Image (cartoon, rainbow over all chains, first blue to last red; front, side, top):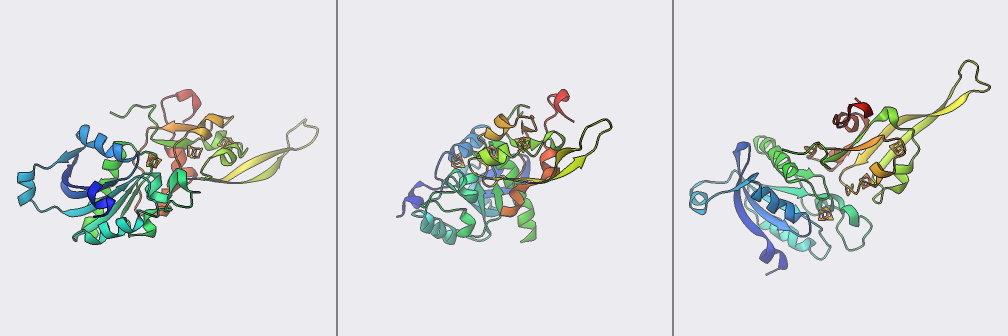
Length: 148
Length: 116
Ligand code: SF4
Ligand code: SF4
Ligand code: SF4
């Protein structure tokens, strides 16, 4: 088991204000940004689906949500997590570190954007982005789903 | 819900920017790009024409920006400000690079004396 598999949490959420979005999120929180995902849940912006409902409701899409700093050592784990995700799947990058390397843009061991590893659907800027920015970013997935 | 003074994004007031390049040089992630040229302005009664900077392009790459606020703090002309605007997610990495139009649209209206 890689460190990623043991730390990542797969949960099903409804996105506040977007009733058509039922998403299954594999939340890969690697640094400070991950706290904002928790903040979005606490604020009621991401509503956890009850497990008994989750069993019947098919999620509309599987989301790999990567928040935080991806080091080159973790990169193979990100690729494996993506490959293990069922279709329909999309990847969302949350925060400057995941988007481009962010504050570590000059560090030799930090991946300069996870789009170097896997195809991205949505990039959410911020260091860290606000929980509301996460919801606004996830709302972009409605369009992604319609197109695909 | 989001306070008006929230640090959602950084906005630009292009008319206040003198293209002095201080923000560009001091940004720790070098995510600000600025293009400008100089023009001679002749004023009646002036002994000689004045040289002014004309701002041609101003871009912030919010993929790289670490929201440290150094540019906002150091701008001597208050041409940069925090804005509560936060809905800036993009479907491409290049979509996180915002130019003059987008940056000035985000200008906060909490202080009517400092801009539109
Ligand atoms: S983008 Fe900023 S807040 Fe997010 S993980 Fe990187 S350093 Fe931390
Ligand atoms: S907030 Fe910091 S990182 Fe972002 S543009 Fe300003 S100086 Fe650069
Ligand atoms: S510091 Fe202010 S005036 Fe100088 S280039 Fe930057 S935004 Fe323009």
